[in-house]
Length: 195
Length: 319
Image 1 (cartoon, rainbow over the protein chains, first blue to last red):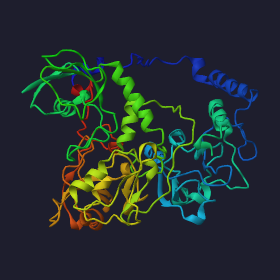
Image 2: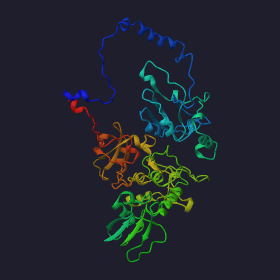
Image 3: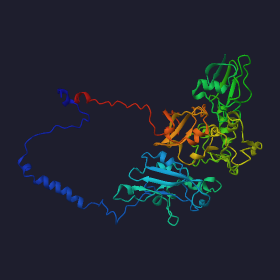
Image 4: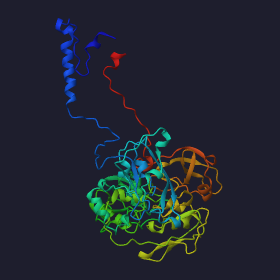
């Protein structure tokens, strides 16, 4: 190191450390202890900031981005056509899928000719940005206000269609995530998107 | 040599060159899009009208402008011709209308279509079209027909560019499909089911600018932008053997001809190379295929990355 290094300051916040001797009162430490304790005690009478999580839950925003859902349409058919745009837009590369062709007798299961036979999201990779939801042209994937639970094994965080696809008898309401314009557009049943 | 000016850029070309070919010689933004014109197929072009340009000056001898927009793939240049492509608002307007017409009956099933990501119609509408449709009527639909066990045919997606008809005429000695009926009712068909079985029939997939003819062995297997295209060749007695093979990991998903930046294949390959040689051991790999930078196939692939040098004021003093 050369001499100039002491002069370099990147933030201009450095302070000179003083090394002066403490007075007698200061050396008792008691006034300083009382001062510190009074600050601590004053916090006992303030409003609590912690909540007891599993028993008490904070109110969630309507557009909270949590666990994904793969939506079914009004007739209970899967909306996802495995177009791959969610996987393409995913910045964390968390989504993978395998497409398959719909058979003649599966028309009540899948909305279009092609469907995702495997659809997996790695929840450890996912950063819950919601880009998949934005990219989806079929209104198939949405993020919901549900939390991804903790697990003991890493492999358990790879969520397949069994978890992601909503159940026909327990629909997940995502209407709050959609703009009024979208909800208005969805009422127009002449559009092929809404049929 | 004829001097022609397109969008204020001049070039000297041989007599008999079309405006589109001259524009491609200049390159860049002055090139009009083309859906039905294919440089390897004689007589192709003049169908889709997406390459319309305005001729502001017919020639040096007769400087009057042409009264209407002309199809640049079918109009030959004259000496001293001045052409406006994107500089003319009339052309931009007309092209927007052409896109709207081409999309009238197009099903817009890109999420399902295997061509998505390398589709000329997607590029055309993305660059020149609007994002909304004014069409309220029912789209025209056709009964699905089975034209063979190698090629999947989707009549609804067809834009009637005739490229596959010319390809079958000019690459093979016997064409078994064609356009039936007239006008709004025209459709590609074979009359007899499963009739397409020529050894070069697979090239119809490559020349098809939309997803009307797609590879049945690749159907719904993967999206093109998840695959890695590699140039490769093999010894083939029937064709040039020059192809692009599309990998995911070590697995070959499909084999296509080598498309240039205008989506045109110049080395046509046979069905054996295209449909049967799906092992990487069958091919000699030449290297990664260069794909135009705007293509979605290039998404998340980084080439020629320059790592920026970090400016660190205390670096020298630290050392």
